Amino acid sequence: MNYGAPHPVLKDAKALVVGVANEHSIAYGCASAFHELGADLALTYLNEKAKGYVEPLARQLDASLLMPLDVSEPGQLEAVFSQVERTWGKLDILVHSIAWAPKDDLQGGLLSCSAEGFAKAMDVSCHSFIRMARLAAPLMRDGGTMIAMSYYGANRVVPNYNVMGPVKAALEASCRYLAYELGGKGIRVHAMSPGPLKTRAASGLKDFDLLLTEAAQKAPIGELVDIMDVGFACAYLATPYARRISGETVYVDGGVHIMA
Figure 1 (cartoon, rainbow, N blue to C red):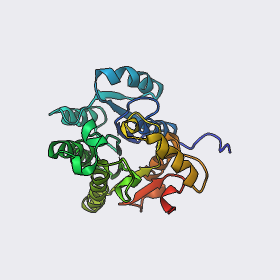
Figure 2 (cartoon, one colour; figure 1 turned 180 degrees about the vertical axis):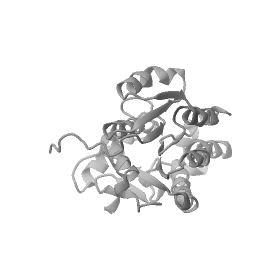
Figure 3 (cartoon, rainbow, N blue to C red; figure 1 turned 135 degrees about the vertical axis):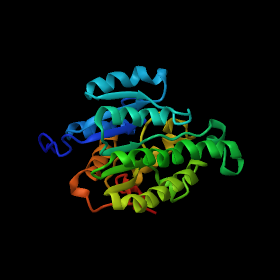
């Protein structure tokens, strides 16, 4: 169905999207949706290897800023927000779309996960969002929206999701507590829970193709979602139309999560 050109409801909004890896990444879908609705963009990439994939996308989306960000490297996170403040003086939207665990800890069962691997997964995939929120909140002087990416495995056991299940559960809880703490400043916080998507991050999960097939079979709408479905859902949450919604875990999975 063709709805025509989108209304630029996010015109002049400043959006920082963290975790763009390539044109298949969820973060890119979010950035594309924000761009279509009129927002100005700042994007981050992990390292020099990733920059080659992300730089053309940033040009395509007319991004005002393109910055490196490895949240495990001291000082990089602060540098990103300093650059945002110098360039824009404000921030309206923050999207956290990064997750990582050491391969051995990710592909082994939870019982086999090392303390070090668990801590690294929690730091990169969860606590980094809290650190971002701490830096972003002072820039959201007129209120704003913060969104982190979760998954169904945070609330139900998904075979082979392993350590990321507890980590994403902590992320969703963090979103609720941040929504409470920041609500008085007009800042809304959400966890977005997309259905399984063919992204580089997902490729690290064992038997991921089976998960995709099962999701397509279970979805009431009969098909998988794509990155633009997730992106426009995030964009909606950042618009005035969602100004009274906060602290939610929003499923964009074609209804898979309601099925037994």
